[in-house]
Image (cartoon, rainbow, N blue to C red; front, side, top):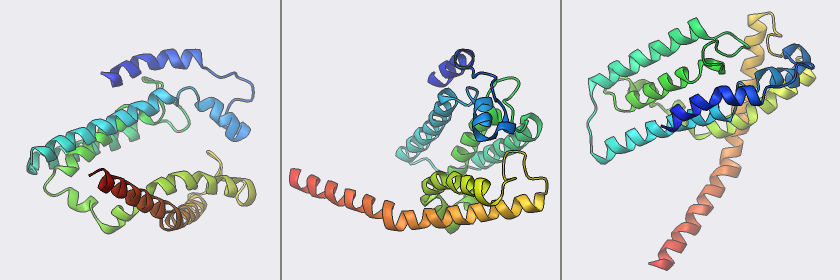
Length: 219
């Protein structure tokens, strides 16, 4: 219900919080690009994604509580939803512009919905999950929050200090773009890994110890 309400509310948010035309656009740098992107990319769109993720988690928790078994129908559902997501991106996404129908970027909320369905079906599938549940994927999921936090910091340093053309639609050569992007990904993953082992993991471990002591004391 909340997802539908948010989608109904989104056009109003766009109208009320529309940015001015002064220095608006990616040609004016990150601030100008942000003015072009906002308010299309707003808290409404973000929250819809979070709710979709919550629905998938609820679906999986319910199946686990009922000890529901895997089924080939979820493999079919995963493949169909993933294919639909790819087709949606290829046919609907216009780089640097919101969708003409939903007025939201990245084909939201349809793309997020299809990916949510794909993840939910994959977790209950018989075969698809084998391609996703591997050591690298588990490791990347563990440090994913650090990657999310640090990658844009690395991008900003590169774009302002080393690769001036590393801006939205700024790199003309795909090989140059691939090289710079690989550097960003490698550095972001390296920082996120250090952050996990020396900062996040020790804090989580300490919090668990405190909670276990409190639980033991209460018992």
